[in-house]
Image 1: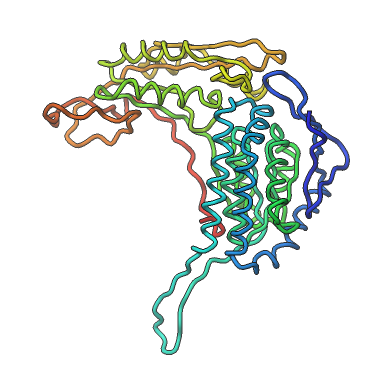
Image 2: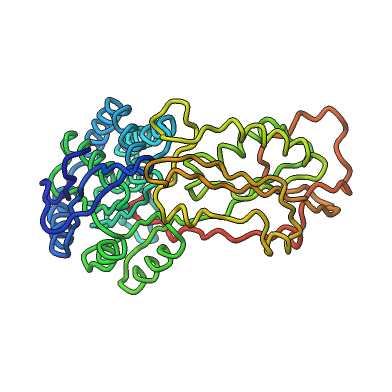
Length: 428
């Protein structure tokens, strides 16, 4: 078990008042007791970010970039240790956890490079003896709210661009992964980030997260999470005049056409549906397959699914770890055939509910893959439907314009995915 995990405010680790527990979802073991930020501590974190902003914005971008390069090197040196903490705290298998850390390493290096690429813009003036130009300018304190499924990668996508462009940050991570957040902050501290530029507040989203979004001194909110919460963040940001960037959930289908490479298609389906135990916005929850390859694809897919090993993500043979908690387990419970599925003309070809026993009973992974008959209609123009796998090299003549290879809008309903809000000035 880790020592008590604290909030990080104005360059100091602080803990006052109540605590909450972070639990290993595979075993039920307590990972750490974590300090829950109070309203006073939240105000102090925002005040620290405000105080640090003037000096940080005046720091030359290449100098800010040097700190990010050091962050990248520290993350690289600690990659294995951070990966184990990710697996220990949120459950994904270690191989995936390493990828989580690698994304942060890559982002740190990429954004450090932006320190010398913050190009402005010049324009001709209609007046004599006048010169027109525009420059990138930081906007102030950025509120960063991140989920538990990628506890290192997602924060890096938000925090690092904000830093290199001269903004300061107050970060509220998921209450399911506070230890990973603290470990990430440690890399910035050791890299020499000035006090107050990065502040960490721990606690429940409905309390500390909502208060952070509403805070009058926060200029921009960047959020990754559920559609429901994201919509509330958007409304609150609009009411308080804040810029807002949202990344929310999706309902994703993989389309397999009749000339697809089925082995490659299966690779994509299994990775998408079972990676991170299906707990990501890009996970596939539906497969739309051409009727002529439905049988072979089903056989290949079922054979691959049988090879999945469910268990503790720290165990080398494991390929599918636990879901994050009991609430997620309840949400993931699905039925093999539903009224809505039947109404769409879909048939259930494969229902997979792999189960594993663990001390906390949270490591049950439930997945349902519904393979649908793809209704086709004649078309006169080239299909723009997405492909799950690359097409096999064409050895025969091209199909005629009447070939039936694409779904109609009426036969394959698609749930629209919520798009992100306007990009902030502080993002590249």
